[in-house]
Image (cartoon, rainbow, N blue to C red; front, side, top):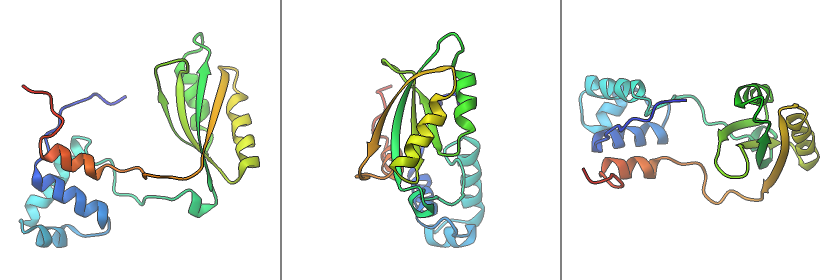
Length: 168
């Protein structure tokens, strides 16, 4: 798990992140031209943002639905405390339809986002998940429509303005 750190963003960082989020294939030189700063400044800022973990990658944003996985579901799992999280996590990581998994508080232990080709295929994926002996129970919620897609730009803008920080 990544250590939490308080990374300060300024307006240039926010504009740089926004530009790369909107146009991931833009070059550093074009980015510097549009932002009105030196190419070296853009490269140095990008390097720092990557080093600090603010930017996790520049890869394509894949739509599961566009490649045939139209059903999205959220699954909470109760696991055997005796075996712990690591073996369960390894089992889940081996299932391609498990997009992410988070340890959570409450009556369940893990929350997973999974995809499937259809409702029948969802049953196959859930059966594959619960086949592991360390998983005691699963509860599934099928997403009907995405109202707000995964997004971080509003958060970046807020951080650059200094909003949401605890008073020092």
